[in-house]
Image 1 (cartoon, rainbow, N blue to C red):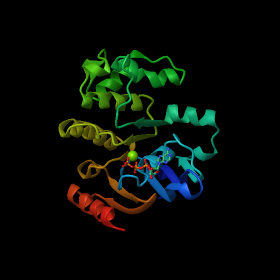
Image 2: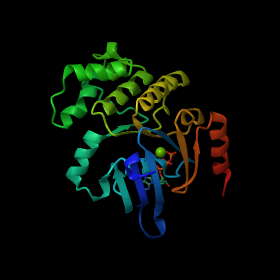
Image 3: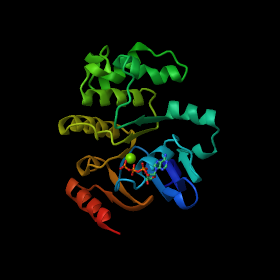
Image 4: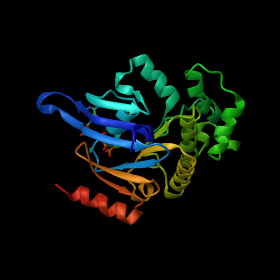
Length: 245
Ligand SMILES: Nc1ncnc2c1ncn2[C@@H]1O[C@H](COP(=O)(O)OP(=O)(O)OP(=O)(O)O)[C@@H](O)[C@H]1O
Ligand SMILES: [Mg+2]
């Protein structure tokens, strides 16, 4: 894969928490490419570094060594202001807990990234983005008036309204029942089929199997990779790495 085909490239990335004897190498010398227009799932045992890897790849957290490239843009070389601007315009992030602002309507939540980027949101782009996640008729609802699945779809709309190069999602279905999870995964599949690059952490083999590829982390390292695998194969591989010592 050439760099132009990669939405995000990590080269020898490490992230260490704490110092001395207490130091935890949460991400340990990871080199990986997330393909443009592809959906990659990240799996691994609890504490294996999945969230840390995602935060480093999305420029939410600085790395201690190595390089993170968004397309050809070196996030590790970017100054704080530049990194903030990149995060607001070229990166979307979705959390397990939705993180919507409770006092704002769905439409206002979706418009927020545009406002933060210094733009006056057009009503039509907010409406279209909500329509794209199937919530055209919920624009004036506040988060507490929406189901969990609907709140997560608002969060996805908020992440997508700036048309980011990459959508990152950390356990986006972790707080949802299976039917709401399926709706969210159907939406992400549709987005990936339309060419959106997606990197998603999940504990759920059925969710990971909806992606194009799955990478497995263990102790901060990428130890395995599957493409085109079904839920059963993903579950078996995950169990293997959880049992390994
Ligand atoms: N802010 C922090 N300060 C200190 N240690 C941290 C911090 N964040 C994470 N860690 C440690 O880094 C390691 C990786 O954590 P991380 O949250 O990336 O794991 P994870 O794979 O996302 O786990 P989970 O599946 O439970 O969400 C863990 O050992 C964790 O305790
Ligand atoms: Mg995590």
